[in-house]
Amino acid sequence: MQWSGLFGFLRKQTSRQAEELVIVSPYISTSTLRELSKSIQANSVRILTSWAESNLIQGSSSLDLFLLCEEKGWELRILNTLHAKIYAMPREEMWIGSANLTASGMGTSSNPNDEVLGEVKPNESDWTSLENLLSAGRVVDDTLHQAYSEWLSDQTLPEITPIQSFIPPIDSNSLSPYSLPRTFTPTDLYDILHDRSDYSEDQIMDAEHDLSVLRVSFIDDKNEFFRLIQLRFFSLPIVKKLLVDISEEWMRFGQMRINMREACGGKERTSRDDLTMFTQNLYEWIEELDTTEEFEFGVPRYSQLIRRRKTP
Image (cartoon, rainbow, N blue to C red; front, side, top):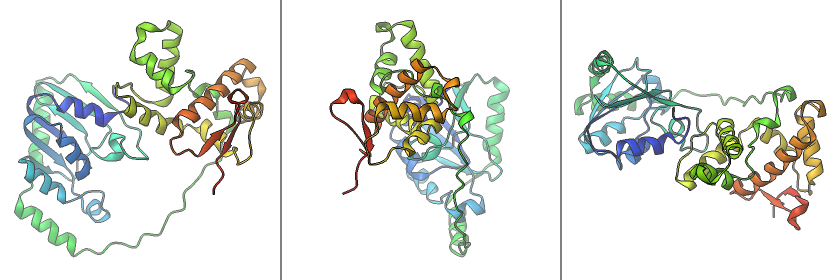
């Protein structure tokens, strides 16, 4: 199963020589497909997507996808009842899951979706079903593309009333320090997973725990791995709760530990030693992953002071 780094994974898979590549995805962003095209080595490519009217009007689907496919010599088909997501090299391998070929679906946007792709072992009937699904779609040619373009140009965008975001109240009973990384720093996490032979069984178990907590899969590309864990770390509910309490005044380690204990429902739920360990880890993870330099840390470093950087 691939839980993260989906675009990097697909880029690696499609860089292999293959007779054919099939992409089935209701939503495809042209920019994401163009980026993926740089790695595609298949002799032919067939793509099935949806051009539902509402999606075209809202911009979640784009007609210029055809122009890219035409440029590359690929076949594009549309099927507006499509919901399946399939990436396959027929008669070789097939990956299915929830991820559309978009920045959010592939995890390359600043606010990615939680997606997964899993490899399946298709039998002959499955390959036939895939062919039937492709055959159900209509081939896009210049005539159909022009017709869609003329139709879309006649449409008026609906007036959309902005929706105020709903921020649910935080339930302290649902927060736990055990949903924080057990590995001391992100660099330690990468090093352990990169070469497990140098580390103990307990360290490897902690690293596996952290992958599960962060819902990421390990990849060798360190910069990309850090980008993935950065997105996931700062979206953890316990981290978001604790960061809210950091102001422009210095916060000491002891206060952060108290805040963590209270956020997680009181001292009865977590041991003092565990709180200390997770608080230490929290400081280290924030410092390594805060690429925007929103926070700063006190000197001497052993005091473990933290505050939100003052705005000029």
